[in-house]
Image (cartoon, rainbow, N blue to C red; front, side, top):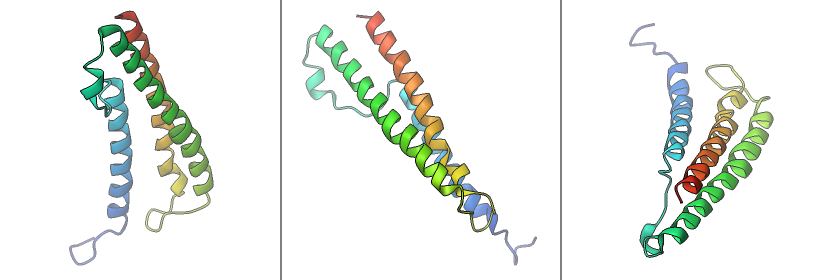
Length: 121
């Protein structure tokens, strides 16, 4: 390998790894209850209602993780196992498997977050 003959697989691998790191990073954000929200209305509520709203936000994140990431990610991973990457020569489904993996992590983290919110009421 030289500068006149660069590797063809490295760019493809980097793009797939970037997707993996992005989704795994989103799971870390979920573990810290740092997912996106708009606090303008919630901050005006009393503390008990604020806790209920935080639980509602966590439940919405849990449902999204279950439906889109786990179920949808599993389906797309399964479908893409027959398709091979152009440079790496491995099934594309392996790279899509990060979706159900992060979905399961998000579900675990949202359950932990709900338990912590309920405990601190």
